[in-house]
Length: 267
Image (tube, rainbow, N blue to C red):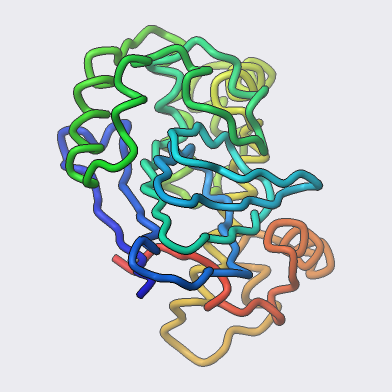
């Protein structure tokens, strides 16, 4: 049987590691097909074992074999096919985390999945990850990346800015954000593009649309109207909202079928 599991990071390590989410098909002889993963503003490190996954995204297709991979920021939903007798353990990092342990230009990895070795951080640990339990993988990342965490004015600015956007679910104007932080919007855009792979505006949009999906999936009231969804996402033009949502999730808000998506459990 296929299982989806989640484990949140301990508070002391949650400054850079958000959670682990697991697609476990190791005991299942059947493929898990036609599933989607939505962007949420986080990076992921995928530890694959077994026959692997087939990923389709923005015109490219990759078969992720046993190994460890770095998943850059995604701007659209990606299609996932989990092969029989396979497992993917995903280590989810906050958007500001890579800036604290890697000097790599994150804009090169936007909408891309690459071998983890390209980060050139903790290389000696990576080959030992596939086949280990989620607790062992978690501990490996804590031991490998925890000591690497560095902080200077740029890293601190990225952390504060991204954390504020996440806290507001993207409903914070970039101009107000830069004013609050005492920097120009242009400077904020430059460091975001390099260290997060997205501009502040792009990250805000992803956060707002992902929050909309959660509103649809976990609504506490009758079905929300399109107007309500648009306004809750800080859109005042319904057509603009629908087009943005379609680009993000590949379907309109009315046509989204929640079981087709791997979504976080409601906390």
